[in-house]
Length: 94
Image (cartoon, rainbow, N blue to C red; front, side):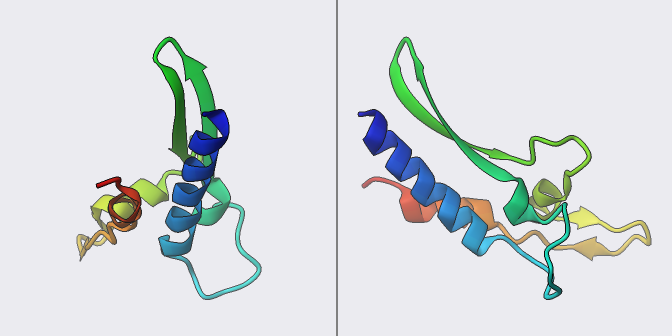
């Protein structure tokens, strides 16, 4: 069961990284979204579960801003990309 949960959690992580917005410059900066997504598989009283953690580092928090949208310091509204929701919708079990 652990292997199955780990496989599906890894697929979700891969989709989130693939769909995440990124700058066109290389090399990737330390705070690039794809460098700050991690997957964990744990066992609790209910069984195995997988988590995809977004930006565990408190200095990096722009992925959630880009997901939901935000207002720039100049007052301009920036629409969210909804890449995390899209990754979850692709992975749902019907």
